[in-house]
Length: 318
Image (tube, rainbow, N blue to C red):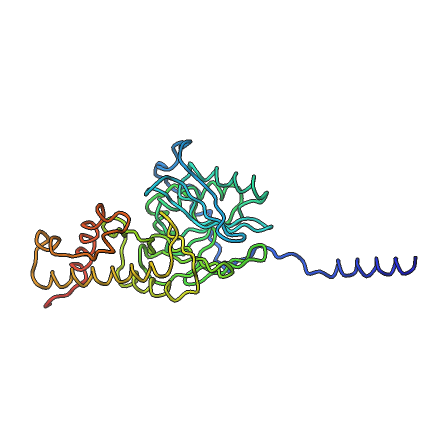
């Protein structure tokens, strides 16, 4: 009997000696939300009902998932980390699907959403943040995203935490690293790294055998190349690009080569004195690029965006 009591005492002692469970933490800068309490908002173009929109939450690896909304080329996506303490989601994308994602996480994993991370300050990715913020989630973004969210009257949550170059979030024993490389597709763009899963969120800057969107809206060519250089060096084998399907580092190397070549071709043609009517007809694309998603719709728009960048940033003789 004494031996059983002793054994029980040792087990109890060992149990109470266990370290306390990890708690959500981050090293972001707290934003004073009171100054934005009554800010003007535009109508929410993502807030209309969308009962028939395809949506999903699929496992990538372990506790890492990927949420999607939309069909075909219109799909928006972001990574989701599920832990015993709660979930972290990237880019809700639309108000009309944010409630579904919140409820799906609660139904399948019985945890609340603790963090929402914005990759950049563009409404087509960050709409719906207010749904989670109202439930108590902490919204995170680069500090440069606050101005366009407020200034453009985007009807989503103003971030609760901001950072300049780097930020770390710990949740349920998992670590998430946020990093701003350079202005690229928006000057507020960040990369979100999940080192335990060799996974990266690289929205809109990275591509998955697909053409960059339109005429390079909100575009910084040198920073885009610098960001791709950074991505290619990371120890990751899964890259979510915010649209379409996941990608690899090899895909980003091909994208980098395309961006460099397009820039050089346009620059050379401008320096040769060609007008736009001449120039766009003389840019060439290799056979592999012609197979990329959206090539027929986007190739001339890409030329136009690069032409605008080159025209605005070359000095010529003066």
